[in-house]
Image 1 (cartoon, rainbow, N blue to C red):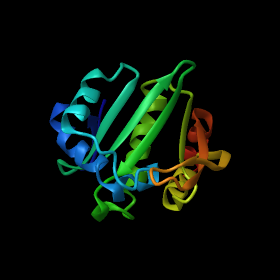
Image 2 (cartoon, helix red, strand yellow):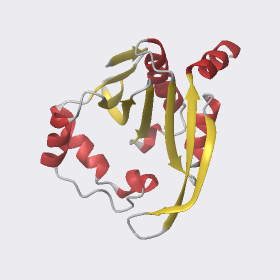
Image 3 (cartoon, rainbow, N blue to C red):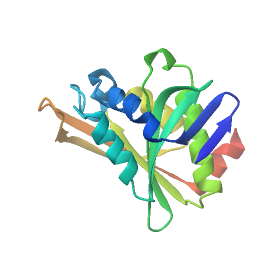
Length: 177
């Protein structure tokens, strides 16, 4: 996948991205929302191995602005034309600028139009209000809340919220804007 809109690029991660992905994944501030406030503790080699052995339906993507990596996305495709997605804007200087919405719109449009996906699902930490705002603005519908359903790396109970977006609802929302 290689998507371009103005100065924004979404591209498949390559072996050359292993170091930056490793840096992001080992940064507890970046990974806290995913349950890893101390980071993943992964090595560059482990990251490289993961990139090289990724299955055909699992995609790790790099988000760039003007050629500079600022975050990552991923998606995986399930049977029945369903995809699960995730996003992290890892460079805090690029938070609260609408970039998450812009990158998600690029990916969602591609999944629905080019890849014939019918439904997109995702989940996020219930405390991640900024992400929930973005997802709901894009038309995602909250389908479940799981209170105190998992523990983060420090053993603290966490809650999550599940979202879904159908192609039909995305088209309706997109045409209403």
